[in-house]
Length: 416
Image (cartoon, rainbow, N blue to C red; front, side, top):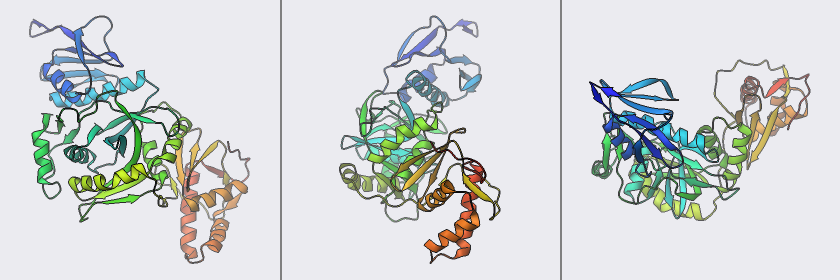
């Protein structure tokens, strides 16, 4: 291959568990950024031979052209860090494709007391900044965006590090949103960066290497609230953690029943917490003080508070006198106070709280209308205005109808 009349020798980047993963022609700055982004991997560059891997990088005027299954038409990156970010994502997808015994999760994870605390992806909750603060607090990082899980059976699931350096979004927040000492830490341990992202170069041994695995200890959901004066760690029902994990997995080819079979036993044994915090170092102090007891002991979870939980959509209203009953091809799973329904044809997963379960039980017994359901619930909840019960029942029925979990009341129902 040539560029400006000069021959460029192609190389393949060989990674454990993948083999030849990326073919590179030129782009030395991208290779350097990619290697820095995967410090936990052993990466060998060998002369390119044979069929090219599905991920390819080629130097072009103005940047580096990137072709992969995610970018079949190619994408030209102007920044080495931008290219590295995209190729890291491709490599992780390729690893999971070749190693189906592992399920990937979008989550951060750190080691505490020999177990992993998982922080599932939450939009704009400051997950990566929190991981930087936890690293500054001395915790070992297993990842700030991805972790893979094995399937060793109930109570024995392990999380395996992918060896990817933490990545901060730039520009970093300024005090008081983050403590000055955290900004200093991020500067001291700065790795490759561009105008959007900065990889962190953590101290030796503080980032788990690719392939290192530990048992799971807890799931912690994040809520950033700068109005708080101190961080809070609040017990949650296991269903909250299960719902989040089911939304954050990489295993898009697995049917929902297989995912539920894998995650349900996991959440039956893991404590689940909500961390509400104003600033990452405050969150770190709270976690270091409270989490060892959570991991080493079992605390009573709070009650969850959702009706039917699936993809939220605009749903058409249903008539209060229309009669409905539970649909065919629905699978049911229980997790403490929650019940999860899977609509088998679509694979969609829905979560019912206690009231939703009462309604579902009525729909399983016989064809019944929203008006009749509201009257029955009104006899149970005498302190709730009947008008509010009717509104809530109609909203729940509309969701169930839209999700195809119920049908008109003249069909035959089958529950597997």
